[in-house]
Length: 147
Image 1 (cartoon, one colour):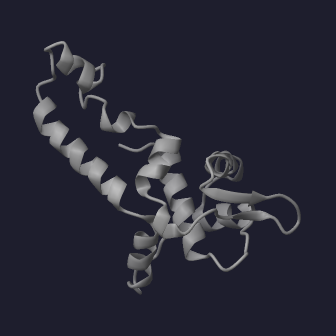
Image 2 (image 1 turned 135 degrees about the vertical axis):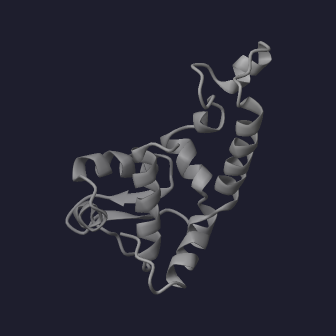
């Protein structure tokens, strides 16, 4: 349901939250290597997040990226909005138009009602789940590996 770009963005923000130390910036090459994401592609993603003030970006030999706010203040929905937009919560599962517009015209798809509930639950999850909470869950499981 989410684009690969959005998945990479979420993974990158989680990575930065896991490795965040006071004032420490992590270089794009290190993030790219550790997450196995092509550097130029990752650079565009991280710059987009920096422009939206989710990340801080510094250039130069000691530059890199870090979170612009506490990880508990960043939700999955914040990242999805920035990277993919909210279409994932409105698009019809099997049609060409959004379920919203098809429904308003009295022509919802055959699975419209069932999928509406899935979208509502997904939106609620993304809205409530913070990066900080995800990091806490990761740190409490020794066998869990982000990469």
